[in-house]
Each structure stands twice: as structure tokens, then as C-alpha cells.
Length: 252
Image 1: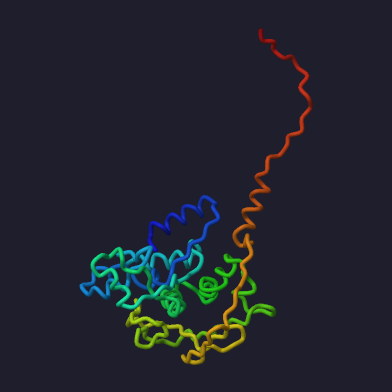
Image 2: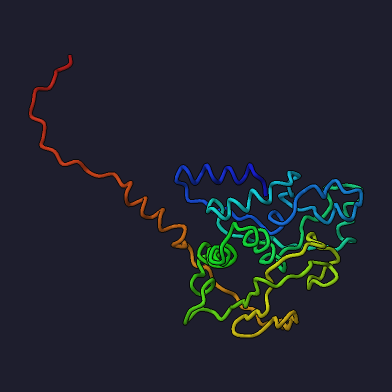
């Protein structure tokens, strides 16, 4: 969410640490200048933790790091509240529920801020939004991959299509969108989950109860293979030598 946090990840990677950085859609698509809005509802709608940073150059900075491999994948931390729920903190900002939207617009935000600016190519876009996360969470190639034996979770993507993000048209059950009025390129035409079409040209056709638990085994190779190999490499090695036969000092 911040330049300082991203720089800490860079320094750790340069030391050889196995560490992953995940900027979220909110941090890539907007900034914390909204906290100074004179409209309480508008400002409160952006309250989240960690907070958006007031430096307006932060989103582009984080996208640069994502494009160049210092950050690894994207998420959303999607957690939405209506204005009347945010109003629990109307007299004390500490009581404002933390959370913003992001999951519906994440891929379009990354495409607009990454691909359309020439920072991400389509392959890096897929890695940042899908494949790398699946590897980190140890569900690859069941997820994050289109192949025989993988789950039939597919997005048919129109990279040239565009739309304007708005609370009036989004599918979130919330009355505010932190990306309100932003025109983005890159829109999903079809979304297929477990082989079922759940988005068809903007028409959402989801059903309650069709989700299923996906186990995530421990020690994902994407993270732990290097660690295990380092452990082997750093094992103490016995030095074979002939017994010492020289003189030994005698202490009184």
C-alpha cells in the first residue's frame, strides 16, 4: 500500500530472502487524497487498513514494481460497507468499518494501469492476476492454468473493450465505488467457473451454493523449494583429516 513497504520488500529480495509482495486494486487504482474530501461519506468510503497513501504517485510506483518483478501478484482485500454502516464512525473515525471494494474491478484496474501504460505485457498480466497467486497458495496447476486436468475456470478477456466504473452499474451490494467515474479498458466477456458460464456479456448468472472448498497443501514449491535447497546447501560438512601426532604442551 505504500512506497516504504514496497522498498522493504525490495531490500529483502536483494538480500536473498524468499518474500512476496501483493499490491491490491485499491492501491493501484486510487490514492489517499480522498481522505481530505469535504464530503464525510466520500472520505469514509475510502477508509481501509492499511490506509491508502496520500502521495498520488504511489499507484504508479507500485505498478512499476509489479511490472519489474519486485512485487509478485495482485489481490483486492475486498470488504465493502454501505454509507450507513460506515456512519458508525461519524463521530469517531476509529469506529469507521475498515474496507473498500475491489474484486469486481481488479483485473480491469490492473489492465488499465499496467497494460495500457505499457508496463505489463499480456503474459505478465495473467501471471500477476492469476498464475503467480495460484503458485504461492499451492493450488497450481489446479488453478491459474488452462490445461487438461485443471479446473475449468476461464476468463475470456476483451483487451480493447472499455467501460466506466460506477456504483450504479457494478454488481457489488454496496452503494459506493472507490473507482467511481474511472474509464478502464479490458473487460471480461465470459467468465467460466468449474465449467459453468457465470458471466455472459455483462449478465451475471451465479448460483448460491455452487462453490467448493479447495485444499491448499503446505509448503508450496514456489516458495519453499528454494528454502529446502538452501537448507541442504548450508548443512555443515565434516572435514576428514589425519589424527594429530605432534607435540602437545603440558600445563602445570
